[in-house]
Image (cartoon, rainbow, N blue to C red):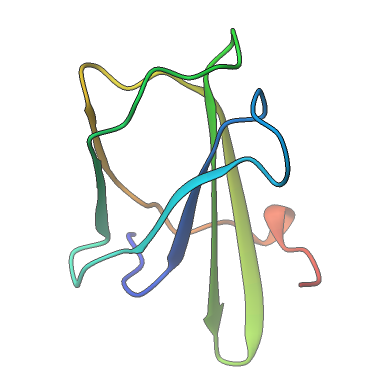
Length: 88
């Protein structure tokens, strides 16, 4: 199952500060896209995190390493299983 309206963050751990490169939300089909993604400074690539609240329960997901082809990154955000539930 995919999740719509999840908050998705693209992070480059190789840059200073919090490493956030871009943020977006998933669409009604659970897809998100980051356009014009520069090459990652971190040698292993980007980290993508996402969170969504369903029935007052926060769900969090993490995907790493991510190396987008070209300058665009797009995929469907899956429903996160209870094992990835964290307190936000």
